[in-house]
Length: 321
Image (cartoon, rainbow, N blue to C red; front, side, top):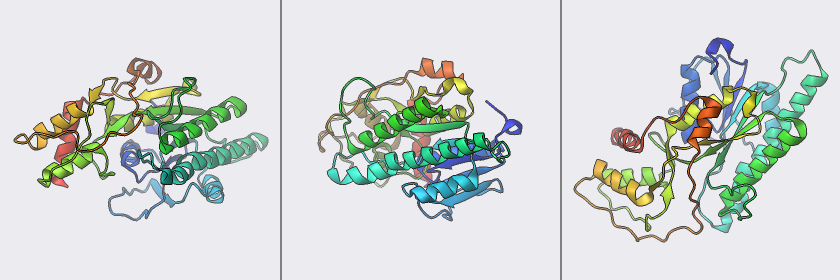
């Protein structure tokens, strides 16, 4: 991976105020990259967001095509880590529009603006920027496997699959330098959506409340957030051999939801036992595991935080916060 002395003049992280985005941002700042730009839809003056001389925050809605064009023109990024997303696992029809806008439309606006900038740079040798040289599109394990004929299992999965399809088209037609990260079930310390299983469970246990669960039978590939952040940064700086490729960011191991819940109880409430079946399971839950050997071949790296250690570190954070 490139050192700070070889760093590009401009790195852009979208969705940098989110759970994964903040971890990615801290990694880049810790390594001394000189010009980091970060976007958020929300207030960028929040006290929980990092600040640094090398960091510029931009409050922008990526679903606004004109705003995206202005952002790209100001920043002129060479590396883009595209984490901005509307994440929601529900199957409710009310999520169709917000997940489309937050995942598919926003990605198309960003790809279009960056490709137009690349085209201008090629046409004008005196251009101050040669355009983007790596775009990392963050996808999801919820997306259908290409070519298997299965429909998306949720509005979120459909929107993510559409974003990936557009990215593949941009790479095929325009030679756009994009790589696709398939991210598995992320957990870990930090402010996040507490409707998700791990933060929901730890918060309820530490508040001496009784959490409610479904059957817990779904096997899931769980990946610690700091490992995901490292994988995304490495993708941003990998050589051009990964352009057009999908790279899995997961542990490669499957553990049922029940196993993980029981592990959290042992850590945070060893004198109590969970009860399963109080909630209905979601329809068409996906079961996939990451190909970590292929990831290691591409990036020279594989995730290093095991599930037990990761859950303990997450519990420690919730105790302190």
